[in-house]
Length: 547
Image (cartoon, rainbow, N blue to C red):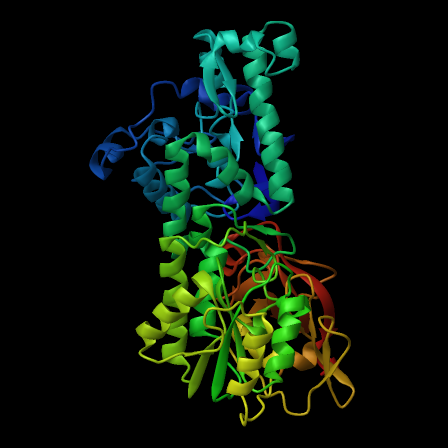
């Protein structure tokens, strides 16, 4: 018997515990797999090329059950929850990024999410980051030992001649004793420890971006995974409380960025307004706490809907300035906007302005932000008004021009709760009579002294109370079987879940006897297909009779 318990996730990457026949390991890890899995000693010469078609695979697939369970892009013979699955020959596809991602995503879709993934003979210090990032958990030392036999010195930066061992680039026990095999094994173990720490810190993407620069195929694998939006969006958390490193060209294709932009266009509902003002971003987050935006706010005086133009996020309505990643990204500021940035952001602006019609749109922008605004307006087929031509937006003359342009405009009723709920839940609650309390951004909303919602200042998401959920309809619900939770809700107790739910989402738990509020610890697909692991971290439970 075996079991897999995932403790932390970061996209496809996981860390946790695997137990088989009383032996437990913490993954991701490299171990002597022939000891862990005795069946491997009888599995020699059973590999089938990954490119083989279904007929060939069916003809030569080895007979009988083997632990770990072997799978193939054209054959996944029903591994169960808690099993370890092995992809023989996976090292052969590392130099073919397109097939790597195509085959990987097909196998991931066919295998239960609570399985351990083993890549035999594949891991070395310079590639284990991309293997973990793409969902592999278990490795061996075969590739490291073969490199040592050839006199190859392994580092996270690549494979080098044995002479590097004498250059002082590493001071491990293996280098001190001139044991290249020990060094190679220790280098892999150390890299896996780093991967584990970055998974725990929810910063693995930034780590992978820094590591993969030495290997073009690893960059290509990352880009191909980014292109699989519908697959990856299901496993990437909706929000985190950590900084978002926007330091490479791949940032524009990160799932978090594309999801935010899609929801601004498809879900977000702006307040009723005749006039919109597009403003530049600021280094300080949230923008409204910066000196520049204090100046803009005083000039606008609530007479227009405020839209912040920024790279890489695109377009951030004022109500969403706290929502991840709008308040979390850290981007190098150079004043230069490349072609890809301009195309992405102008596309978002164009779609937004096509869907949300304003009588007037004012561009209080300069530089690259002004360029993308102009292009976005052309896409939407509207004319912009300009209030700072040839001047910086924060100049006195520019602010005076903005004030004058808004003269006579009626005030816009800004509704933070309405805006965030529309982005987060895809629905707009009736906010009539709701009164905000607290100092921004630590805001709570009550009606008749009954708290309905609060704002999570770490993620920018709304946390509904039981009363608040009544205003949100039937969305983001997790149905459980007939039991009373004594703590967090585990996956075996899940009956169904709203397909929109992603890790980090606020959810309402509904059972025959109880209601619960909490945060999803895994996406809907995983919580309905897993037999183990925390599905919802519960904040509060109440019996149905308390209604």
